[in-house]
Length: 366
Ligand code: NAP
Ligand code: FE
Image 1: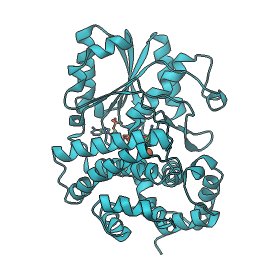
Image 2: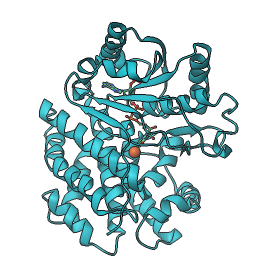
Image 3: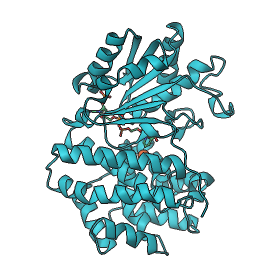
Image 4: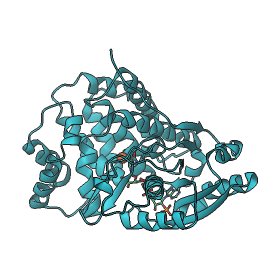
């Protein structure tokens, strides 16, 4: 047996972890750039807790609250200019994956003022100033991954920034998700589930990473039931947040595979939220497997006896109606098929036709 396992992020999980551990901020820096989306962090208590913690220990901060969903390099550059002008020495990303990922990218640009958005993808390995992440959705796991997924309008796609930016600290308090609306809860939970599946059925999976996948499936056995009955109680919020963290730790080791790579054009061109884009492709992706041993173990832990039962769950929670035709699918399949990084994470041989088939069966209604 041989494996490498890396989790450099210091994780604080539980209710009120920000205020209970506020002194941690002063060990990281003396002036923070807080990076958030436009509204939600001010309503769900996360921004308030961080502000209070920083004030109590005398750490200064500046706020950049303009991060949109699927953050663009333009927004990231704007945020990093504000950080540079204010001489911040660390970044706190608060929100869903978009502000956390934007925060990570901003931390790279602040550390490397000579790098611009035009040359970031060819810049080689770069350092960043430290990042603290505070998730308010249960989905991306970005608080424990090295990835920063950004939108490049120049290349008309979403892609990984290509740097390794593990947050120094993750403060994970599921109370921030108590009022997350049902649709965002489902879409983000589908993202967490797809991380668990794609990390588990992955060329790079190991004994260690499987522990996280299997614990995550155990949590999803409960979470799927609650999602279907629309009973999003506090136990559910805690468990789905845990599942999201486990999925993040797993993809931090193994990377994602087909649904993630294939989902990006559905988000960029068709506006499908990230988790839903993965979710809508997941069942056909699973059906494409020829070897079933590990998938059966996964279904078993989920309390299911056949992939059809998982399909029935997905049919209940996913309803996607997008206008898409065979030409577009061909274009997306070509672009995905040239993405060797995602393809090599998939443990089985795939032909171009298989990718077209997964898209078509998932998205063309008749
Ligand atoms: P998001 O784009 O961060 O946020 C979606 C929406 O949810 C926004 O309108 C946001 O409002 C709102 N929101 C966030 N927290 C809320 C709360 N507690 N209550 C009510 N509304 C809330 O969504 P996400 O799915 O978490 O993140 C998606 C992004 O993460 C994508 O760009 C995806 O590619 C990326 N991702 C990254 C990784 C990684 O490892 N780095 C992994 C998977 C996905 P505001 O804008 O007002 O805040
Ligand atoms: Fe994801």
